[in-house]
Amino acid sequence: MPLNDDQNSDSDSSRLSESTASSSDSEYSRQSFNSDSSSKPSSPASASPPKVITFDELMAAARNLSDLTLAHEIAVNANFCIKHEDLPQNSFAGTVKRIVHKAFWDHLESELNEDPPEYEHAIKLFEEIKEILLSFLTPGANRIQNQICEVLDTDLIRQQAEHNAVDIHGLANYIINTMGKLCAPIRDNDIKQLKATDNIVELLRQIFHVLDLMKVDMANYTIQNLRPYLQRNLVDYERTKFQEILEETPSALDLTTEWIKESIEDELSSISDESSSSSGADSSSKPIISPTLVLNNGYLKLLQWDYCKTIPETLITDEARLQELREKLNQLKIIACVCLITNNMVGAAIVDVPDFADQLKRISVPLLEGMNKKTFDLKEALNGIGVQICSKVNRSLTERGLPTLTEEMQNNLMGQIAHIVEENNPVSSLIDKRIQLFMRSLLALPSFQKCMPTIPGGLSVIQMEMELIGSQYASIVNFNKQVYGPFYANILRKLLFPEAPMGKAETPTD
Image (cartoon, rainbow, N blue to C red):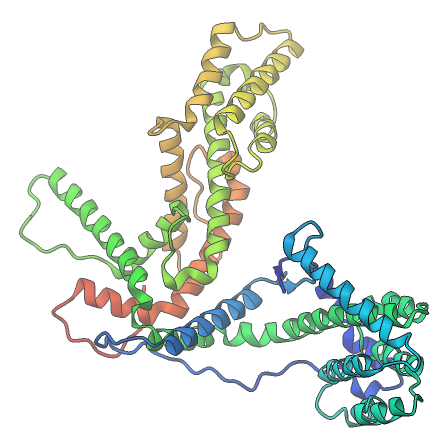
C-alpha cells in the first residue's frame, strides 16, 4: 500500500474504539497497540575484518533498514498514514487487474446461476472473509470470535451446499452486520450501501472492497497508537536497528565515513588558509580540529547536497525532509537576492513605501513555485519577476506624483535580477554565505536553547521563513546526533586520532 502524508483517514481511524464501544459487542472495542519489543541502548561494535555477505544476510539488512525507516517516519511525521489507492484505470497493471477481476466475478456469477448452484468458489470467499474479520479482533474478544467461526464454518457451509441448503444472503447479511460493529465510523456509509445491494455477486465484490478499506483504517489506528511509544524509545530503537544492519553489512558506514572525511578535509583546508594569511603562525604545529565542528560542517553540506547521489547511510531516514529544506532555502535565497538588488538600485524611490519588501516577496513567490523541478525555467521566472517589480515600482512612484524609472534603470534592474542565476553571482554568493552563517550559528547553540540567533543582514525579508526552516533543520540534526553519535565517535576517532587505541564508543560531547 502506498504511503502518504495526508492525515484525512488518520483522524477518522482514531474513532475505531469509540465506534466499537457503542455497538452491542462493546467489550470487543479496539485496544491500543502495545509493542512488547524493547530497545536497549547499543554502542557500535569495533571495526571487524571484511566478510563475505550472503543473500540472506543482505535481505536481513534490507528488512532492518525498512523497519528503521518506517519507525522513524511514524515517530517524527505526525501526518504519516497509509492511504488506500487503486491502480490507475489507464495503466497496464490497472487494465490487467480489471480484466482478471471481471473474469473471476463473472465466473462466480455463472456458478451461482447453475441449477443446482455451484458454491465452491463462494465458500472459499467466505473462508477468506472469516480470516479478515478475525484479524480485526483484539486478544480476549472470545465471544465474537467464536460467533464468527461458528457462522462462517466452511465445513458446515460445504455440507449445506451438498444438500442445496446454503443461505448465501443470510451469510452475507451476517458479514455486513459484523463489519458494521468492527469498522470505523467513516465506513458507516459504505456499510449502508452494502445493505442496499441485492445482487449477491456484486455484494460480495463490494464486501471485499470495504474490507480492504477497513484494513487501511486498522493500520492507521495502529500507527496512531504506536507513535507515542516510538517517540519515547526512538533513539534506542534506531541505534539498535542500525547496529543490526552494520553487523549484517559491515560496509553500511562507508558513505558516512566519506562524508565525515570530506568535512575534515574542508576544515583542514580552512585552517591552512587562515594560517597562510597570518604572519608569524607556527606552521609546524599540528592543527587541532573539533569533532563537533566537523560534524556541524558535515550537516551544513546537506543543505547544498546533490540529492541525485546517495546520502550518508545514517541520514537516509531524513533524506526527504532534508531535501525539502534545501529546496525551500533555494527559493528563499532567490527572494532575498531580488529584494537586495531592488533595494540597492531603487531604494531611495521606495524608502517611504511601507512593507515594500513584503510586496516584493509576494510578487516573487508565485513565480518561483516549483523552481526545483527539472522542467522549471528559472531564467524566465526571474525575467517575469523583474518586469513585475519595475511595474510595481513605477506604479508606486506615479501614485505619489514622482517621476517613474527611466528605461535604462528598468533594464539595469531587470538585468541584475536575471543574472542571479549565473554561477558566482556576487549577490547570490553573499546571500548564500549569510544563510550558511545563520544555519551554522543555529547548530552552535546548545540543543536545549530555544532562542534563535540574530538574523544576518539582507535576510530580514525572509526572517520568519528562515527561523521556521532553521528550527526544523536543528531538530533533525540534534536527533541524528543522539542516535548516531556513537557511530560518529568511532569514525572521528579513527580519522582524527588514528594512533589512539579503539575503545568503547562514546557519544562526542559539545
